[in-house]
Amino acid sequence: MTDTQNFKTTVDVRDMIPRERHPLIFSSFDALGAGEALLLVNDHDPKPLYYQFQAESKGEFTWDYLESGPEVWQVKIGKPTAAAPVAPTGGCGCAH
Image (cartoon, rainbow, N blue to C red; front, side, top):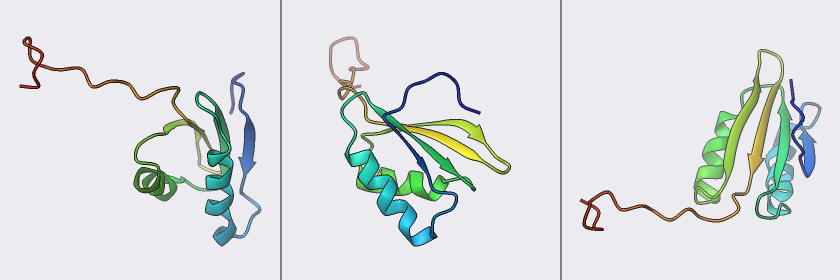
């Protein structure tokens, strides 16, 4: 079930040939601007796709499950607006 969020595009791959799914999803993701998101609709948990995003997008994506089966999975996949700076953990400004 989706809420009232806005998405630049919805990519419903349930009726697609499996080998065509990931290229379409990645091309749709590449077309997003900073701060935009797409809605992925799938017939199984797209966890392998998540790992592919980690490997190919260098962690520069957001991934939020909106619906988790058992028949339909919906995932909001987005591009962050800007890389968040890493805050130092030590009081002196170093990372210890």
